[in-house]
Amino acid sequence: PNRAYLKLYESLTLAGKIPVEGEFCIDIGGSPGGWAWVIQKCGAEVLSIDRSPLDEKISNLKGVSFEKRDAFSLLPEEFIEKGQPVNWLFSDVICYPEKLYDWLSIWIDSGICKNFICTIKLKGDPETSIIKKFAAIPDSKVIHLFHNKNELTFFKLG
Image 1 (cartoon, rainbow, N blue to C red):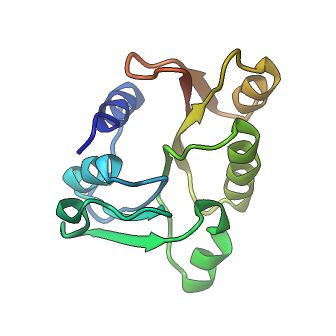
Image 2 (image 1 turned 30 degrees about the horizontal axis):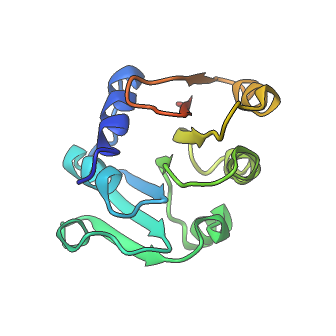
């Protein structure tokens, strides 16, 4: 896997909990597969979403599935209708923070998922108002990890 997996290892260490066997996780912005690799190594099942494919070594792992699509087209209703619980939602997708916030709000409001770890990608001098919006989500925190570059990590754990 690429170095991005280090952000997820650091995040899970700070969270004090990990995805476990029997849990279903979604990883958006998953290519080339570093985060899916970490999640799979924890024992959980992971659906990775990206416009670019996963590395074949990752996509062939037991418990890893992949859908080539726009991550933001993935909505909670797809899983609610199937009766598929979502235990964790992970994002390392490259996008404007406002877009991630709007999409994440839909997922949080749906109540289908309780655990979220998402990278907030920043460009230049960050607009503090969007960071404050993430931080204002109940039971969440926003921190700068050692392995974050010009980005922050959002946590909301149930």
